[in-house]
Image 1 (cartoon, rainbow, N blue to C red):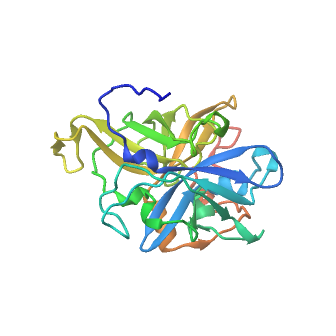
Image 2 (cartoon, rainbow, N blue to C red; image 1 turned 60 degrees about the horizontal axis):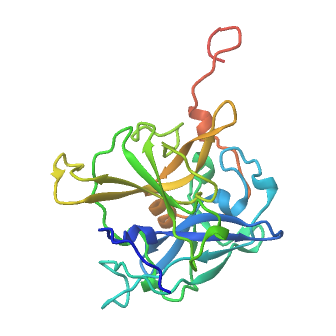
Image 3 (tube, helix red, strand yellow; image 1 turned 60 degrees about the vertical axis):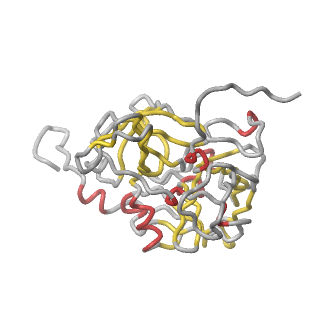
Length: 304
């Protein structure tokens, strides 16, 4: 008996292949998952995800998360796409998919010398981002990298729509070889040109879930789109733009997770072009303290 499919007028979104499923493996059997995505630099392909995903440490304060559990390797699963008439890097990604490989990605050979690279200002700005070169992919030309596409640049405002593309649902609920990611809709929650809390990031109002750490974030407009050059694109049904990498939620005074944090996209290129050796040893930021606003004394006197 064949599964009957609905007859909706639709089109598969190639960006749904952007997020890969990360199964974190280590000592202990508790299933843990996260999200990552592929990034191409020359002939190399990198996995992009969060520093806290590979270390089990909160990048903001250096405290352990998940009861201090630390992964030893990643089982990376993704859908390949079909590539036609292009044996190397694609210029026009195809939408049909083929196999669904799973690749083992070791995080370190020696515990204190991990394989990943990170931003040169990782601990100064708390940049929750790492890149792992993938050397054992079955076929690099069939991997969809986020930067394989060119994106229109359009005007962004506080309140504009964004989508976090990640793996919100546990693997146990999935019937496919690889879980498809979930599009979680939200909005820009801070003035995007103002560095959040003196860091190269912005906030989003989005009800995200566990497992979405490391997700790519896209802004998209349905219908006419105001472009960065103050013209308007009228001929696209959807206009998308890659914005950055999601790295979790901030907590309010009642310890409720509420607002999400997104690191700007340019940090990925900076990390790959001028990398710092990966480290799992967290260090407190000195530059953030240096430029933090001065606090008044408890008596209400001059700044301390």
